[in-house]
Length: 426
Image 1 (cartoon, rainbow, N blue to C red):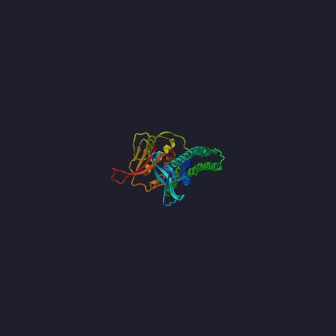
Image 2 (cartoon, rainbow, N blue to C red):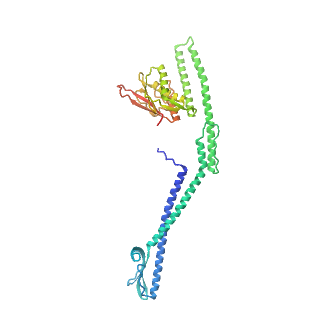
Image 3 (spheres, rainbow, N blue to C red):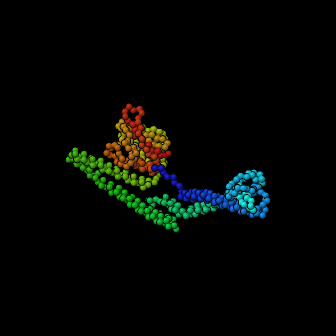
């Protein structure tokens, strides 16, 4: 689904006001143009009728009235004709050019003689008057709009200022703080109701966070004691002189389960601490130095071969403890799932770390490889949390973890590499 483009509130409101005002001005200008044109045309026609009536009255007393071209034309006619109006182009000797006139023509029987009387009025003058009226109207509307636009914008900014101030305070709100959130009061009812709800919700979140944190710490502390006691009793059981082989196998299995449970508890607590932003110490860390140290420790415990490529120190600013956990989990995952007698490839660049272990085929669902408790192998001692901790650390610092499967080009066997890459910089 395509994400909606976000627009600031004041800009969106101002844009809506601007578009509506422009549409209103255009429609008003068009309506005024046609309405004024209709008025002027009616006025011209009334003037033509009045002029024709005057000519008719003058003809009654003086039948020898001369034409006044191009405004008045009088001629005797044998045909009766009703009054008709039309636009016509006629040469105007005063202007020395052809002009557009509105013409009224009709016959009238005066003193026994039928006269065809034609009167005209220049249309171009009325058109100029019409355009002047529309221009002045639009100019006044634009000036009024500019004034109202900035007045409305400044008033809206002042009206919404408490909301923006409270939004900034909500953004800076820290759930780990014991201090309640302080919001700016407003005389607007909706803003006041919003402040009350936000204050109530943040207070409840703080209480829930403290309860959850306390619960996590209590569970972590309380679960360690019975696990330690169980571990001690099992070790005591191993020292029994009449211990049978079946009992030994059962105690060994219990010991492995307890060790796995303790490891699971530690990792869940670590995830909770990362999610609660309890790792605040940051300093420049050399990822390569940490990887070299970890691979050295693994060489003492396993026969795995590590091939390190790249001379970049890869300096990253983060918590040293989390950096150690990040690299350890990636390398431990590679050691745990690699094919026997196959090397683990570790590559450094200026922006990323890549760790590859040998494998036969790509994971069935690579999109879930960083999810909690996701496992495709048959490792009984795996908690399914190692890579999810890696993802959580990356999310905490804005790193980019990824998985890919690459075929081994120089191998005749069906062997490839599971590659986990962390991009520390884009």
